[in-house]
Length: 231
Ligand SMILES: [Zn+2]
Image: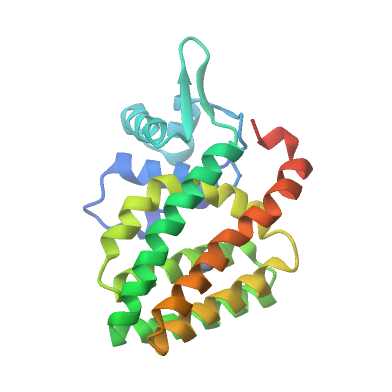
């Protein structure tokens, strides 16, 4: 178990509570699959690795259990839940419903300052793709979607889907390991931006739908190739 390498402690804001920082570190370790589905978690081991006391670790695990990412089993301890194809498809559906609505709104008005950051974000996505760095790509992908929500004036939408999207993220992480995935996703992102720039709500919603549906095409092969990670 290696959580410390994902640590947000170094760049966390001083006001962020220790428990929240531990939760972020664990969430990232789960999503990146450093903590494998089915892995048993030890409060003491996590506390030692992150150099914190057990109390914030316990609080973080409770929050992650609420988000259905870990399961607390009486007498057997806490384990990372296996990937559920059904839960992943439900989460994907909710995410798509919200993000297609957000992108329609982005076509009505979009913050020009946020728009500039999206071009920079796309440059970083291409760099991550060129370096075959799928972890960096996944983070830029997340920033891309957050920026669209903020630019459209509904950053709250992202907060709403943060918990449920973790179920999709682990599958996306496996999808990104396929060589052809990153260029395809970047092309889809560019199409979404083009539609926002031309204020074409129909085409933006269609582009977002196509983007967030593509995972379904890959899901059967991903599940078949990683049977130990799925329930
Ligand atoms: Zn994306």
